[in-house]
Length: 287
Image (cartoon, rainbow, N blue to C red; front, side, top):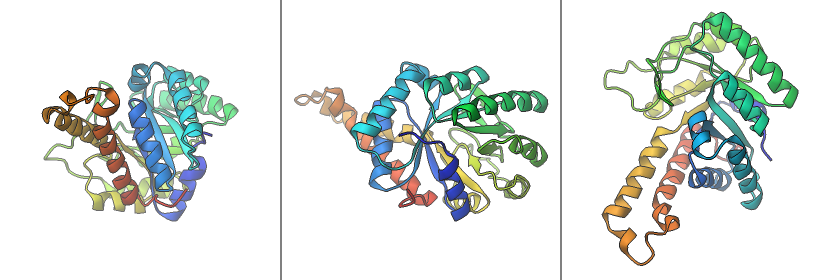
């Protein structure tokens, strides 16, 4: 059964580790993440962007697939199904479809409008027993076609949004989605510490987990980050192994063209990345 992120992230925040949010893009991805979580006794968050939800046939399709897998694969670890970077309308649709958690990304609105819309999403979510993530200071890079430059959030704005009753808060601290440029300045730990100090134990979220050096990830966890989002790294690994399989001509041997065989190496690569991240984040055996 799907759960909210509340209990898993409060526990992580208190005990000094983070839970991985892994974006899913299809059945293989979903299965890989769930099996890896079960094998390593780790709580896990399945992230779905609005674009990925549309690609997979809509939010209800995603909910049906995930719930079916939880039952058929005997998944007993805590699993949250979370809308990633949801719009105001998208967050409501995901809640109606059966997601257990949603992110409302109001970071592109001015702070007053962000507050009003976040309040309304929280009101609906609380009536349905769903957790909410809000964002302050847009995360850089590209997310479903929206490009941000990696802003650093204002700690006072973070407190204002945190006090509305969100379960988790994504605060920009110079992190970006996708590949980090060579001249990237790194994470702003001074601001992260200020945000953690001022937001009264609300677990913090680090978006753009791909490419942040391991020591920075560990330091961010020590300063209140309890949820880390990973997507691009899994995509790179999946693409590389699929390319290798085809370049070696394995799709031309016997029934190598069968999608179950064709997609297997990429799926295994996703499992390896997910396990590596769970080790780095400290979530293994925390289910």
